[in-house]
View: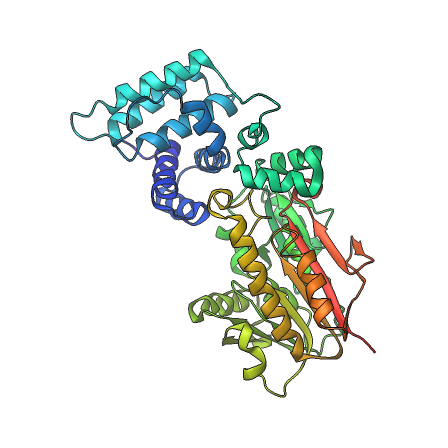
Length: 438
């Protein structure tokens, strides 16, 4: 069968659903190999992310219609992808969904397999019956409707109330923006003008400076990206480095740096300073160095493979003016870009990660100069990884205090900022800024 949007999507979904692969990495590899035209590439992307985002909902639609064991590895992903099109892609006629599913089943099935008949029968039954949901007062109603595991749906409701929780979950199921940040070393007005001329139609972020949403993908294949004028970075993530007050000659530490987006953003502000980038994995630091070279700040970045929980031992007697701890986290703010996270993370994972984060905070804070600035951030919206860790850290370190901060477009008068995903249609993010007392 000729490679097209649906074959690329099905191949990717088989890897994600059957093998536990990461959706973004698998899809990027598949699209690069397939070299689909723009419209086909966008359809493949929609099919992959939409199917994974709504997987729990789609499984609920199919569960009473699947009477036999699905023995061939393509069948479940194909049924889910087809059901996604039936319920969410109004521009694709149902007859086309059935026809394409039939072709894919015959192409992917084993010799003499009758799998295509099974697929066709289930999808026709789905069309006849239509959508089903639990009763509105049922415990799993929001979980199924919003395609979130029950524990996570309950968690959102417990922390933000039913109405806001539903908006947060709906936001996580919306399409992610193609977000870029223009380097501080580039002429922003010229780059914006050139992006517009090349039909990227940049829209300025209401949240972060030098951040823009593009109307289409493919920026990484352009000279804008290759020459280091832009980098791919969500607007909420771009706020982290903006929380610092730079003079330009500081010694900075990025304690959990890979892949280096925030390291580079800090380095852009240090023409006479340097940022030391740590990561526990040597392999990931190669990516930091590659990105620093592409963004033309390699001479301002030094890397070291080190577990941040051992930082004081390595940097004995050394202190830094600025410290960033962009801590390893559950990624609960990234469910739009990495939708499979919702199915793999557990409440226990959040508790475990919160402990690791607090260990890093306790360790690395000892390297801050008197009067220096420490910024703690996560791409999670959980209370345990954020506000609760701040509370615990301050209780154990009376010599530290939260420090109010302002970025170009937003302020945090209490020293903490949580961006929920429905507020700006961005990633969910948390930022806290500390300084020493006295």
